[in-house]
Length: 135
Image 1 (cartoon, rainbow, N blue to C red):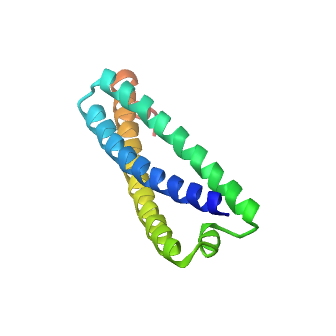
Image 2 (image 1 turned 120 degrees about the vertical axis):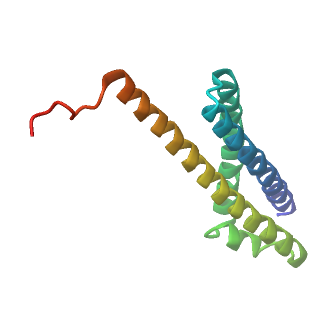
C-alpha cells in the first residue's frame, strides 16, 4: 500500500504541474492562432499532444490503483491513506479539478475561435451558400 500511496501522490503532483503547463500551452495556442503563426501553432500542438499523452498514462495508472484497491473512485482511495496524507492529496485533487476545468474552458475557447476562422475562410473561398438560392 505504501508504494501505491507514493505513486498516487507523485502522479497527482505531476498532473497538477502538467495541467498548469497545459493551460500555458492553450494560451500560446490561442495567441498563435490569432496571430496566424503556423510554425508556432504546430510546435504548440505537438507539445499539447505530448502533455496529454503523459496525463493519460497517469490517469490510466490511477484507474488501475482504484481497481486494485477495490474502491469506487479517487476519493474512496484517498480515504485509505494515512490522515496527514489524505488532507494533502485531497487538496491536490481539488486543485487538479480546478485546473482541469480551466483547461477545458480554454480548449473550448480555442476550438470556437478556430472554427470561426474556418467558417470565415469557407465564406471567402466559396461564398455564402444561400445568397442566390430561390426563396
